[in-house]
Image 1 (cartoon, helix red, strand yellow):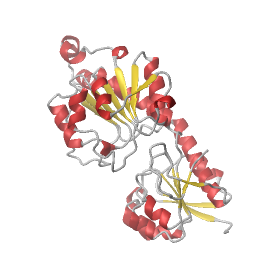
Image 2 (cartoon, rainbow, N blue to C red):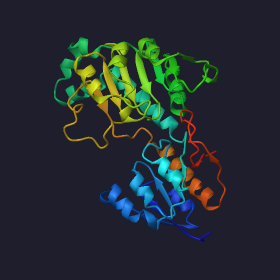
Image 3 (tube, rainbow, N blue to C red):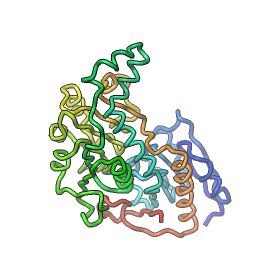
Image 4 (cartoon, rainbow, N blue to C red):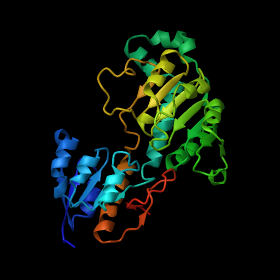
Length: 336
């Protein structure tokens, strides 16, 4: 085993992680302009390890990674990594599940509350000199209190569990649909439902927490929005492609649902003419739900610890990480 490893950082992470493995790791950062798959493909063979957040490791990139031993994800989702190709090349893939759960949950509830109280439009009116409009236009600004809402959780993992704690603390009722989690595993404050249709029919707010797979891609579409209803809210802090964007645009334009709070989009970053940009019924944030001081510190440290575990040969091979992942035999490293 080499005494030193070359480690690639395609994106900025907290210094605590790199500093913790500086005894054997030499780091190379990539500028924003050189973060594309073509540039990564031309350089990936230089490195023993990579710690990444959102950078895409496609099949072509990984096929060129002749010296790569480990792909360490700074976060939980692995949809930006071609797991099949990494497994075929015996590259360990690891993530940091649960590290940013509280941060994402807080962002989820923030979006939920902002949509319910129409805060985006209220803020715009004040800034545009329309203070009196907010006071007199009751139909647009007088909304139901959240204590009467039922929050439906589409999948029940680490983030959803934190969301459930927060919303039940506000007096809201909580239900969940997750075909991979038994009802007995749900906390007493959360009732399980048997199918997605029931989840959307019974909920005032649906918050998406499922991973992006072929099964879940565009799994929230027109039927789900009609089931949610004209006072319903959809929140997505998971992955953008879980929602059928065209169906969402139609649901908002036709007032099929009340509004949407989205931290993720199918195309990131979005095009300048994205159809949701001019819609006052949606609040958009740039995939920052997990960016709290605590989460970025801990994710950096855990990702670096995973790299050290592989460097020292202290890893355990198991199935793809997460409650919802199908067994595949891939080489993955689960953080304790």
